[in-house]
Image (cartoon, rainbow, N blue to C red; front, top):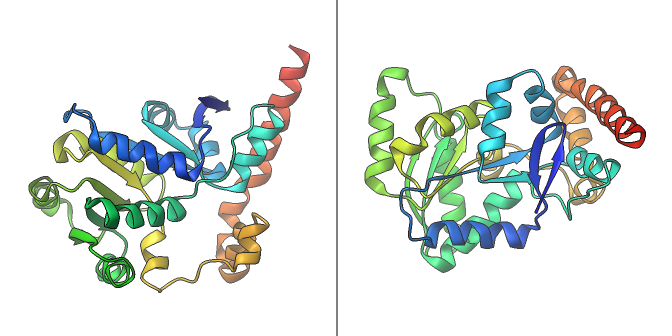
Amino acid sequence: MRTNILGCPIDKITMGQAVQKVASYINEKNIQNYRHIITLNAEILYKALSDQKLKAIINQADLVTPDGSGIVWASKQLGDPVPERVTGIDLMEALVREAGLQGWKLYFYGAAPGIAQLAAKNLQNKYKNLNIVGTKDGFISSDLMPELLADIKAKKPDILFVALGAPKQEFWINMYKDIIQVPVSIGVGGSFDVLAGKVKRAPKLFQKLHAEWLYRLIKEPWRYKRMMVLPKFILKIMQEKTNKRSS
């Protein structure tokens, strides 16, 4: 089941159901069906309104989870609510935990030099039997991209986590997923930095109140320009709500 917000589909799915979905993708017989998962927040959804290529990628994705309170709020306003937030970092942690149990192979690509390796090390210390087959930072030159693609393909991970920031990571996965032939690829934004211990996630209270955006703004005031998208997003949703009522 999916809801639709401003022309973008979002799966009405819980965290547990998302993990089960990924497991089914990994276990399916059709090995040529390479899946793309997007964790969609309000900022990227709003950007898709003026970027048709990005919007097309979102519409083509195999699974689109509601990443952020803005998406959850919008779905309620439009009368077709999603059950809960399924954020990139929470989904990554849930999949990593499941990977340790299922024996899935993982590959980390993205973030600054050394961050993916540190995140991998921390996770391997936390979860037993975790098989991370490769890591690579996101600052490689374009001439080395074929080498990276070949390495990912050769190591045959079950899940590729890409931390290039949205929407860059979505464009990258869409461009290369058929070349690297990984069953599941997912963009996870700044998750490696948090898992490496370089960036502190919002305290539990902010998470519970769905106000992680506010914590980030307090810690990183320079983000205010990006946050200016949120009022515009809210206005679009209210306009859409009004249009629905009058139609």
